[in-house]
Length: 67
Image (cartoon, rainbow, N blue to C red; front, top):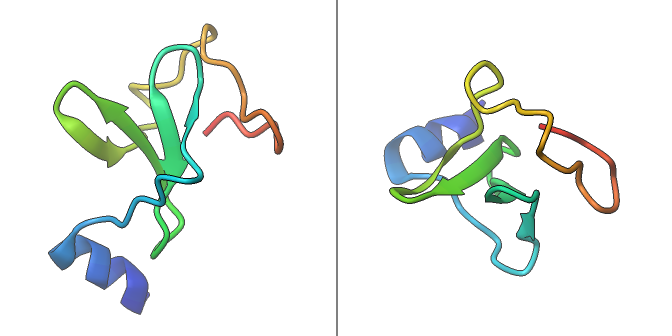
C-alpha cells in the first residue's frame, strides 16, 4: 500500500534491465508497486487491461504472462 502511494505521487520506477518487447510495445513491471507498465509514444504508463489487451501481443518470454 505504501509503495503504491509512492508511485502515485513520485511516479513509477522502471528497471531498464528488465524491459522486454511484446511485439508492439516495450513492457516491464514497476519496481516499487509491481504493476505492469507499457511504453507508448508519450512515455511509460500503467498497462490497461481493458484498452491494451491484444492478441498480437506476445507473452513475457520467461513467465508467459500477458499483462
